[in-house]
Image (cartoon, rainbow, N blue to C red; front, side):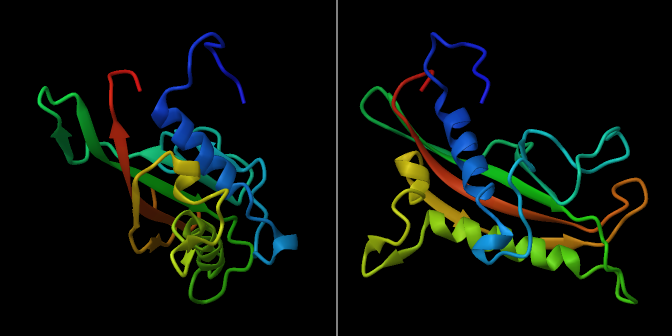
Length: 179
């Protein structure tokens, strides 16, 4: 992955986005998923809207920051620490190759693949992480809440294909500015 500033530490939020991207790129048909997403997961690239000139090969998934800031709380005598609730939106789109009278069922399979993979972030068994390499994105986050997905059919001016959104609330501890 490209690092424009090789002499600087990677910002915490970018490290989280990269970890989430790598996690989702692990969706693969040979691992029991309906789709393969290697090379098809993007950060901060919208897949929807009339202004999107070039869509990637589908299926594709994009990880976006929500357009509004989440809730945060401060700690310490000088309020030197902060716990943020950071909202990430995961959007996905399929090529609708198997349309039927109900539209496209394909998007449900892609959404299920993504949800199944996201579950690894918080999966525990008897209090221990089931997937230590993915648990809390390798310790980069302090908490996670995954909201039920929203699945939409193709919409004029928005998308020619069915798509989904999943909102994720990450807890992010910030101890100093620039972290």
